[in-house]
Length: 584
Image (cartoon, rainbow, N blue to C red; front, top):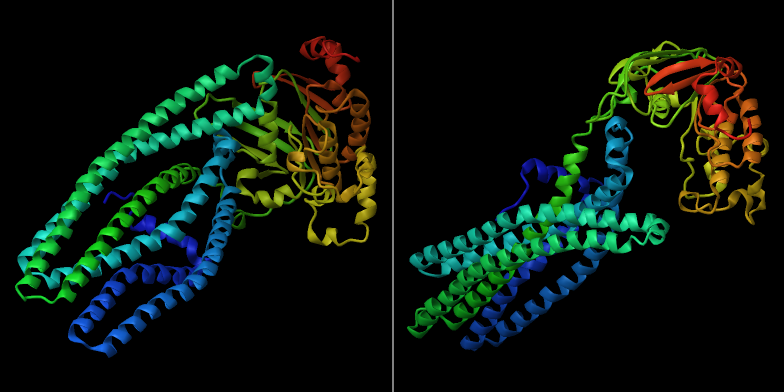
């Protein structure tokens, strides 16, 4: 039959059973025993019939006890296997997720940013579920079914004349060939169907996320129309796959029925002529039914395997082709000295896009405050990501205190920086957990921690946390849904204050704040900035007026630089931008 794995793929898939190997083998042997009942029961039944014909009452009793024992063992084993199965699924899920995220943290962000979080999350969910199904359910079934079919056919072949054995084997091989061809024919359709299903899911996600815009512009018929086209295409692909499978399976089923009929004729005539006992007919007819049943079960298992492998292959295709940043353990640790940042002749381009920066250089002295301002799309956020080590240059270097970020342990560098992105980094959990997430274990145990938390809450204007019924123990919900945009941003700023890093990188730190809160937060930030190297990206210039140097960046070039008063006196682009904003 058409399958999409080789030995390397099997080894890779089975690597997930390492933490639950004992339970997996218990469950596996249960599946084997369960299938082999299809051999044992006809065998014992034939034994009982032979005993009845021979008038051997003791053997009849022993046979009945044997059938009962087979069932009792199955029930006991099933209970053990059920408990093992739960441990297997949960163990594999944890193992796969831990292995993936252990690798994901070292994915090259230049590549992952082009994939998108939503798409990656969907791929991972499909991949984990598919992998669990294959390793936990499909593999044990396939092996058990193959063992049972093999034993059944061996018994049948040695029980009938050689010429008939050859004929039965040829018919069985033809059946296998037809089903293999059916699998091959539908595989491409399934891969295309998976892509369309992902597009349908993406469209539903878009409707959920754009509810009000769709409502305001009466675009639901438009969105549903796009979904209808996807659904129609998916329907055609599904019908094609099912028709092909049914046609080829019908031929295979006919071959299997011919085999079954052949057994009745061959052995049946032998019984009439006295060449075989009636128990032989019962045994072989029972075995033929077993082979027939597990033949179709095997076909379904392999069909299921191929369907799941479409999702896993898609995951492998993306993940295996994402380069990794060099393992931090193999690199020298970062040593903070003065916080000097030097962008040296760097070039940068996202994957499959034109170059954003080319031979760009900039020197930022330690202990000073710098601001990147200018129109959107000019490269400001890209620069701050490069300085943070979140993405890396395609040429040139980013040096911190003379140390090239591509040649040092980023993990050790991150201990010395505080990086606040445009989307405040708060997660589903308690406010206290969010505030203290960046602190090492020894600081979490410090007696001074409560006083420090209280101090930064006041500095960051986060007193609102005490208004909640449970204060710092309040659960803020997924993506901080219980907090306003300004509250999330102030909480993220308080988190950086508590970490107390030497280098601070802020991307639009006051974008979600009103004017009153912006002024108070700006004052708190300036208190935090003393003696540190600070880089701020901002469109609202109130935040950056007190910066030592402001860089006006447009089209990935620095067009103006100087302090606030110097740039105002130049009456250039900075001043024009200033005049367009209220409150100045």
